[in-house]
Image 1: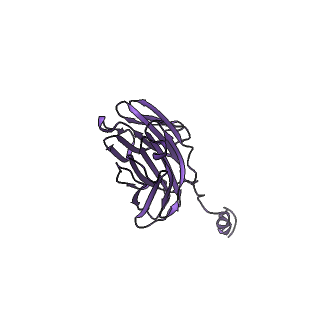
Image 2 (image 1 turned 135 degrees about the horizontal axis):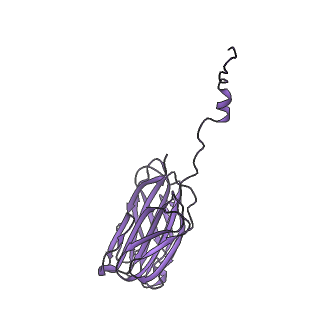
Image 3 (image 1 turned 120 degrees about the vertical axis):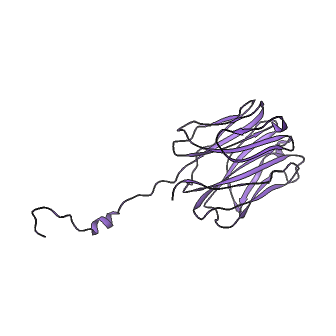
Length: 235
């Protein structure tokens, strides 16, 4: 197997209060890592983060989160060795069971032959044009997944500068969410978006290839081979 992207999926964004966001994702037969970036926008702190994420009823682990301190929030979760086969549900549950008006968006990307341990997440937040986050714990050969949650809304469009994974624009006429992936450029991979000035929160993480399996014949296989013919020695 070769390290790389298996499949992507995308939830229908919510623009009104809801206890969770749910959508289906299908992992291919060789997928061994599921990464789930999520974004929320809400006025109350306790309404814009997640208490848990599950895939096919199995709890996922949070990789990291970031909050802009005002309205926008971004998180990444993951599950190693997820179930494969037909579409199974991802359920991301908000901390508040009865949120007021808020925006919630999410999607997923699965990988083949990924390592169980991803890099340490990096986060950034600001009020500016062109959001970015520098993923410090990355190396050549990694695939970096990043998400920006912004308060841009109907004031403009957020354009990914990497390969699009999923995107939701003008959710509730208030929030933009954009998830992308890109090949790492060594350490300190810069993930960026083109957008007008706004308040935003961005998070990124490097997904790494599993350690390469040993290649070539084993010692036992080599020992079973006949000795090479030496010139001048009768056989």
